[in-house]
Structures are given as C-alpha cells and as structure tokens.
Image (spheres, rainbow, N blue to C red):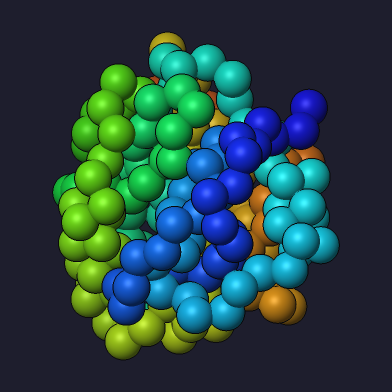
Length: 205
C-alpha cells in the first residue's frame, strides 16, 4: 500500500536539520515527517516518488512511534507524534544511551520514547525544531548532513504489546529509505526491546 500524500503546498525537501523550516508536502512518513527543517536542497519528484513507494506506513492512529539514531558509540532516541493526515514530527524527550548499555536500559529508553508519542496531538514547528536541535547535540554533530553521513537509523512502531523495529538505509541523494523486509517485531519487555533494537540496527546500510 502506498503512502497517502495530501496536495503539496510547495516543494518537499529531503533531509533534516535545525537551519530553517519550509512548507512541505504533508505526509504519513514517520521518519520523513518535516525533513525540510535543515536541507536547503529541494528534492526531485522522482526522489519523492521513491520515498512514497518505499515507505509502507501503518494506517491506525493508535500506533506509537519513535526513532533511534546509532552514531559514534551512542544511540539517540526520541518519540515521533502527529494526528492522522498531518505531518508526523519529532517530539521530546530526546535521549542518548551508550551502545555499551545493557539491553534492559536500552529497552526502558525505548518504552519512555513510545510513551511520549501521541497520535492525538500535532507537534508545533518550533517544538519539532527544538527536538531536532537536541538530536544533533546528543549525536555530537553540527548538522543533519553530518548525521546522515554517520548514523544508522531504526524506526520504532508500537501497537498494544507488540513493537516493530525497521532498519533504514542511507540514500545516495539524501535522507534514508526503509528496509521493510528486514523489520522485526518483539514483545514490549525491556530486555527484548533492547536486544531487538541492537540486532535490527546491524541490518542498516
């Protein structure tokens, strides 16, 4: 099933960062949400179509969503929120857990981020900007371009007692593409969550 896109307000930009906010196509991509926040490079229609084809989002509003960036020995996690049909944006809190942490500590961070995700509120643009700035600070990089070049990205989606982890690969042009065939689901238990997140992160490219 293809992602549903609303009518565009202006060109969609691929890439994230704190430099500026431009209008973008409303989208159901949990990770692409407002990736216009940093990149000054307008995406081609072909690139946008590729992203639309690659991401197969859950259709239920009851999903909680989060993201995890593996970079330079740490894992930066945070919730993603937004109502049905709106742009899904990063929210706070943003957490950093070292990759040497045990599975249960990492799993508890995942649970905290999912608990902060909401399908009933829209994150304001300035709040999303702030969350993304914190992400860059915790990742110890200055720009989203630098994070894209160095990080591995895992999307996290939860409904009920099941949590699904989906690895993403870096795109040659900018941003990331979903590797849905390599996703894995586990129960909502800290140890299992932490172990599954670490395992799935190794499938990122």
